[in-house]
Length: 243
Length: 243
Image 1 (cartoon, rainbow over the protein chains, first blue to last red):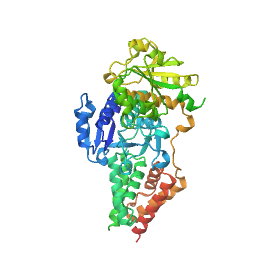
Image 2: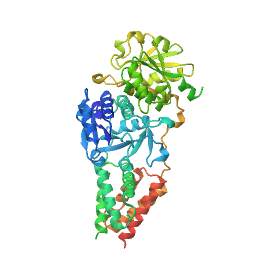
Image 3: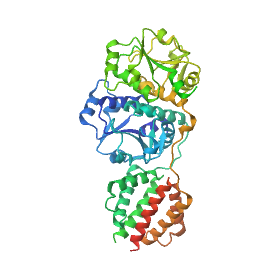
């Protein structure tokens, strides 16, 4: 796969972005580095309209795809990466710095579509959003002033990934086809059903348990073929449990 | 010299910046990465006032020093670096990419003050401005869309220089304690029992299925904590299957 199609395999997902200037800035940074696929989840409608109608709005923004949920926005992705301003000790996920994260992303875009999620300016990504992520990237800002402007954070991430793709342009991709987020979500769904049927899911667990297991399933290094095996196994167990 | 005084030795010089939002964004990116010394040359007065009076204006901006010329702004600097969007063939200077440039800057800030110049949004640095520079840095954007937003360009430069100044030891991702082979084997064993109880394990599967699942479990990126969760879930399902 050549550099261009790898760049086509990276999507930036803006979740609940509020500020039209930030949307425009994110789109511009993407375009600077040759990443043209933006997806927006649940944007503030007025802001999104304003961003698109701004003078000099980037094609990236005009062609952005809109989704109602993170689940749908990442369904075709083999790797989902979240971004966070907080340190590794405060989150459940493994946290990579931007450089190491970009290296991992650079490898993965040869195998399929990769999503990088950016949260809202005010709150970042929610725990529910994060539960869709395999791991997180943090740009190493100083503790006294951690939180970055959205457009600038996108710019640094695009810069880092673009560098990896340029450096790796000549190498051949040999990765096995990875399981997509959609396949993983089906596994998570069947697990939840199994938990209910087996009594593992008790009253009071609810959402937290589902998010925990979604994270666990994201952490599996599953090929598409592996995913089929898991799904087959779970269906069988579930069928027996409901017997 | 420690990291902090090295950071103190870097100054960002904005030359003839027009847009107050860009000034604010540049200041914010500097602050994110611990660079607190901004100098502005010949700014548009109204814009500069507006930027400083904005809600949440950074201390970096409030304490920015104003100069009438580049000559004065860089007088105390041992190295002056210009930034440019154009390629090496079109300018007189040596042009480094951001990574190599940051390495050179990282070495130099131990010896004295270093200035990085950013030009106006519309015209960049003039030939006169450039004549003060030892060499130039270019962020490798794509040819079709070269020109970066000022705040984003500052962010990437600060990010690159900050990385050089950071201690090497901090760059590793903080990983959780990994599951041991023993824990993985217990998961595999419980899976096998579950398969038998659920009928997933049919006659003829035998050893191959067990090996396949052992490999699958080995491929999971499991922490020790994760392993406990998996084991608890499997025990519960198994208990229910045998009910």
